[in-house]
Amino acid sequence: VDTRGGVALDADLTELAYHGACVTAAHQYLVAQGQEGFVMVNGDRTAGSLQEFVELGRAVINYSLK
Image (cartoon, rainbow, N blue to C red; front, side, top):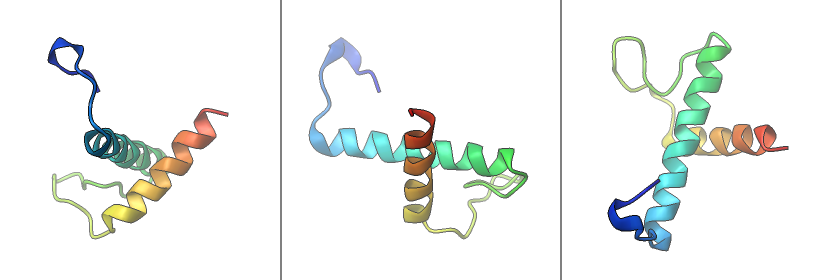
């Protein structure tokens, strides 16, 4: 995440941005596997818990960085 003026994010915002990236990674992974991601085709959010998407996304990111 980039900020206006290059100001560093505080710890809370850094964590929030990372969790957003994790949810995005999990969504893309699931959709690539032919499964339902975080958001359905009609734009509605799926019933899966946010924490499950964060954890899956963290695993996807860590695997991709190896």
